[in-house]
Amino acid sequence: MNRKKDKAFESPRPFKLTHQVVCINNINFQRKSVIGYVELTIFPTVVNLNRIKLNSKQCRIYRVRVNDLEAPFIYNDPTLEVCHHESKQRNLNYFSSAYTAAVSAVDPDAGHGELVIKVPSELWKQGDAKGRSPLRCS
Image 1: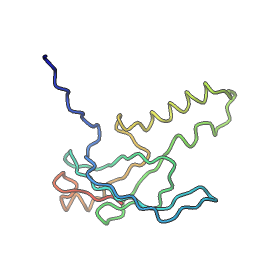
Image 2: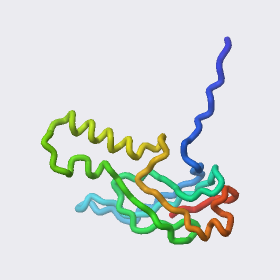
Image 3: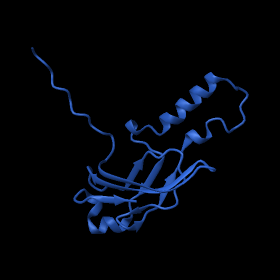
Image 4: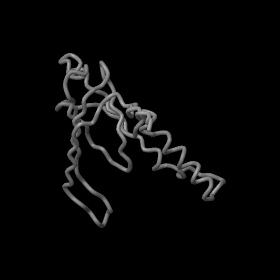
């Protein structure tokens, strides 16, 4: 039997996630919320990684650190505002197409994400973001 070998999956992300820690500090049943933090260890797969795009739906993010340095970030979850603007159409087909468009805007397979972290410039000077050493995001 002649079988073709499957091509290895190539990620559109410029990094590989190697370790993840999720810590839940508090669960509030009245507000239906969870409070905690995440630590990610990633290895850059490209030289000069300057932005890290992650998926993070329905979150409120207070701060981001990369290798213990404060990192500027942008959080945009388009699924939270699918039908918040006034629309003349109010049916399931309209909602479905609007939701599909919002989800595809942050599609991880297209290299997008709700959370965009700018790697601090201090790490460029140290050589950490040049693909030689892991980055710890928290």
